[in-house]
Length: 153
Image (tube, rainbow, N blue to C red):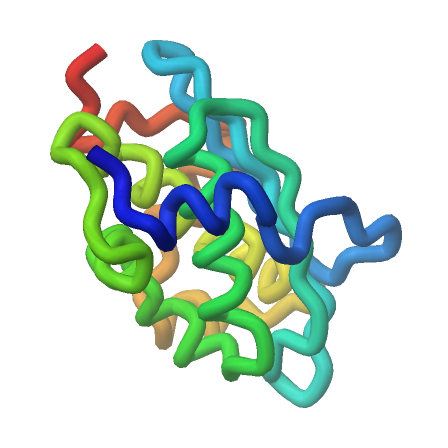
């Protein structure tokens, strides 16, 4: 069963939309369960100034995207990278185990948007410093799917 916070973020999602001139864009998808998420960020002084998302998926996918963007707004890039699937799920009052992969995708989309920003700005030393080399490699290969440890599909 979903918490009241999940229902609230599903019915009234925050930060929905696209940032046309985004500094970083992160897209992840899970073809097994059908969820697809894109997160757009604007960065100023190493801080997420604006953030939007577009998600096609279930109620949990939309709610986790909404919550992940709320948690990330105004944070430094380093602070935003600390937003994990568990942090998102906890902020929503928990998710059923079979829906935990949705929060995994929201956290991954945010992470990819940050890596995209760093890559576009030639900050490869920062990518290495933050331990994001594997994420960059996946992005460069065009990999967007991550079934996640909780995906039952």
